[in-house]
Image (tube, rainbow, N blue to C red; front, side, top):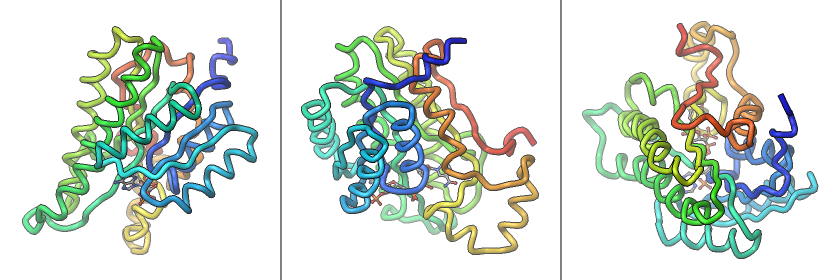
Length: 254
Ligand code: NDP
């Protein structure tokens, strides 16, 4: 194995939802592997901090405000990236949100932001970036799935539906864009302690039950996604497309 294949020097990556949590972790990992990284979300001050962390690693970075549920925002973000950094090699579709209530009580106001951020946002970011990758004749698109891409969980139905959609979005784009040499894969994280899961981890009984359910016996940390995101962004994964790889401490194996 030639490990220089994992080197991302000269590559430009975009990480949506890069202001905190898993997105910030993956953005830092890509920079550590050599990529210049654009971080986007709806909150510029938080993004600026992450961009500064990336610059201190010796890489270029831009912080761009972008609501991924808004197609005009996406087009502006992709244009800015191309104009300032010259190319786009990697997209990590990480921006996401969740709404917690029983399915019987879900309203349109709960449903739309979840589907529009995760499913609509991931697709239109992929489409905008693919239009840059196609003339470059190469690209890596990495979607973020979840345990709920594979299994059901109660009281988060819009999230479950959108994550199931992400699995099929990954396969559909992988087969359609293989002819352009664009690999489309996904990462399926298990349970990670972040702002999204803070309400769950605030419940001690839930946390104990969850820890017992994870074969590796611990909660995931953002660093646990570093290896897989670099691998799927690099030439080392050129023959992998249409896959969702779970980084879940063994949850789905049990
Ligand atoms: P966080 O809630 O900590 O971070 C979510 C990120 O997405 C933030 O940067 C947020 O920034 C951004 N975001 C939210 N809505 C939008 C939007 N409309 N447009 C652009 N950016 C947006 O979540 P995590 O770090 O935990 O999760 C990251 C991703 O991984 C999410 O998609 C999540 O659903 C998924 N995931 C998380 C798991 C976990 O255990 N934590 C497990 C499986 C999947 P801002 O609000 O400033 O826009």
